[in-house]
Amino acid sequence: MIATAPPRVAPITVRGVGKVYPARRGSFVALHDVSFSVAPGEFCAIIGPSGCGKTTLLHILAGLFPASTGTVEIPPQEPGRLVTALIFQGISTLPWLTVLQNTEYGLRHMRVSPAERRTRAVEQLRRVGLDRFVDAFPHQLSEGMRQRVSIARALATDPDVLLMDEPFANLDEQNRLLLQDELLRLWQENRQTVLFVTHSLDEAIRLSDRVLVMTSAPGRIKAEVPVRLARPREFRSVRQDPEYGALSAKLWEALRDEVLRARQT
Image (cartoon, rainbow, N blue to C red):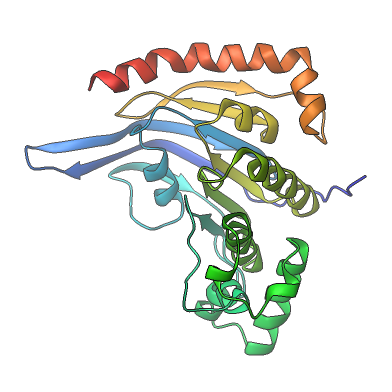
């Protein structure tokens, strides 16, 4: 049994957020009046059709660029740690750095001392099962292992909020399941607040406490669906739970029209 840590004090509150991009003809509204909150230690998934602004929303929360309208409330940054860490879609390891150097990358920019950087990086690599590969380069690793490096790099900064943008989208089904298991284990140990973007209904149900469904562009929150399946969520037991099928049907019912609408634009 995995010990579950108490949740951290890291709520997210989003009120009336919109994002408008300049376009060749006028402007493009990516997000409109997005409002929701995420409780401390909650694992919240976001699903929606392609182009609905899911990634844009995560980038705003990560502070990569500002919202055009509305407000975002996240706890202030503390010395030696980040409030938010973003894990991008696809592989984001830097090919000219070793596994250890990749994992230390965020800590280096936080001006953490070399000795502490190494200690924190090695610890996170141990937790994702890669401490034997500290001197390897990304090209020597499988795609799943490189994604584990990305997760270790984010966790090494000890963020209160973990933002994940389809981190397993490019992996085969077997590696997706294994990394889902690892992510759930790490989350139960750390209890960071997680906002997880995915196109997979199965992944949203298996991982999250609650699923936010977004509309087609301009994106807004259409529905909130709680996931009350017992934890820990072993793959076979989740699929055999009658509630799994009901949740999957409910999410698709909320999402289907938005996917069709997105295909027509």
